Amino acid sequence: MTCEEFHQALPELGSGNSLERVAHLRSCSECAGLLADLNEIARQAKQLQAFAEPGPQVWQSIEAALRNEGLIRGGIAVEASPQDAHSLEDEAHLQSCLPCATVRADLNEISQQARLLQESDEPSPRVWNSIEIALRNEGLIREPEVERPRVHHASPRWKLAWLVPLAAAAAVILGMVIFQGTHGWQNGVNAPVATVAPEPQADAASLEEEQMVKLVADRTPSLSAAYEADLKAVNDYIREAEGSAQANPRDEMAHQHLMSAYEQRAMLYEMAMNRSLR
Amino acid sequence: MGGCRERVTVLATVVALAGGAFAADLIHKEFHFKVHRHSSVSVLNEYGPISVRPVSGHQVIVNAVLHSAKVTVDTNQRGSRVEIVSHLLPGANAETGKVEYDVQLPSDAGVTLDSSTGPLYAEGLRGDVVLVGNTGSVEVRDVSSGHLHIKTLDGPVSLTNVSDGHVEITSVGGPIAMKSVSGPLVQVNSNKGNIAYDGDFGSAGQYLLVTNSGNIEAIAPAFASIDVVAESVKGKVVNDFPLRPTNDTFVQRAGSAFAGTLGKAASSVKLLSFSGKIHLKKRQ
Image (cartoon, rainbow over all chains, first blue to last red; front, side, top):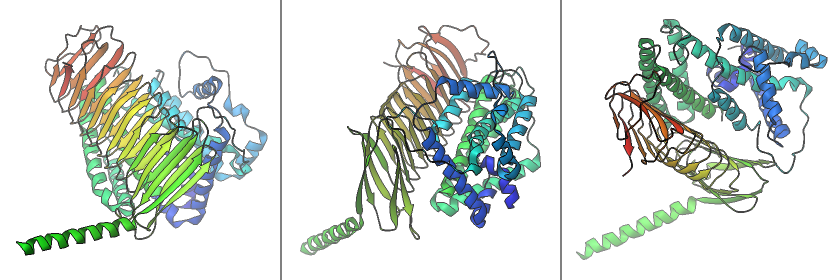
């Protein structure tokens, strides 16, 4: 992976699904420094926002923004336009900063793709819950505290750092949309059932899994066997669940099994990545 | 005979000395942090157990037992956020890199515990709790009001007296046992592990217990108020309750799927296994 490819993939680092980037980080001090800056932003963001639980207005704004982008649809009317809120300074910064420009370009691409994929349904409460949990786990939202921490001003270079958690949240939703779009909604009425993934993708996935196990082995050799065995078990589960969902496209339970199997695989990747990045 | 006794005495002495020498390698450390309400405490430990329990006052007390000098404990406090990390030095392994943590903190603190080998133990908390393990056991007792998230590969999970928060467990291989667990959302996702639930399913909750090849045994009292669906694609299902049929489109298949309501159907319960057995059992 080149530095340019890494910069383009920067918004996806939180999703924990690329092992190639980890290898690149080990060999490139510049990109490692960039990632360190990103982590510093996350820390600063926690300090900035640690003093209070966001009010209902914040959630409404997020929901409105997502609705405006076409990521969700439903009964609530939307008036806000998040793009209008960007200052000229931000726009100027985007002209001069490749990583931030890439983040925004990715967000625009995500929203465009989501508009194409999204059918009609409101995401389940579980989606909102997952976003809230992710933000809470990252320390971006908390319960109210007595003392407001000292505010530390971030570098102007990172004024658009708010895009990173938003991109992560959008990626979560997009993942749900793509999954439901390709495998049919849970009631199996709206969409056709997906076909089995083509062989090249399967090879790529297999390669990535090998890399994941290797990363675990490098960091904690005693765990690599467990990861390998569990990965195999999860892949078997996915195969069986896919077969069942294809045979019974209207069976909500079959789709639930498929969702559960993918959640397990996501957990394995996440745990392996977190461990290797420590 | 006398020689045998002598050998036993010598052996006992050697064992005692060896034990003393081993104990002498242990390094004890204690850390204190002052925090405010709703603080956040995370402990990342590569090898070894982490135990968390409540303490009065706005303080966090960390007792760490390091098994060698090849591991250090890094601490970091920013406001009411406290981070504890075991830092492995070159040459450390699962034995020499082991650290045993006993953490006392305010009950309203949010807690994140992460250990490869565990075990992880948390009790008496009211904040959000996140537990990440690999092969070690995970045990949670007397937790309420906060959300509880557990991720583990193959470690057994045990929850007792957990209420009023979201419970989400994802596990690949370990068995999961829940006793007196209730809340607005209880989701368990397992691959090979058995799932055991013993409780009343609360009221107005959504319970989703899913496993691939594991068995599910849910024990509930006769007065439980549930809207239940159970299905095993390849396994067998057994129901002890006289359920009222529902009007939805769920296809009931004798022996492999059933659905119905009990009482006022206050909570939604879904029990799903791909190839394991499911038993909805009435508490005697």
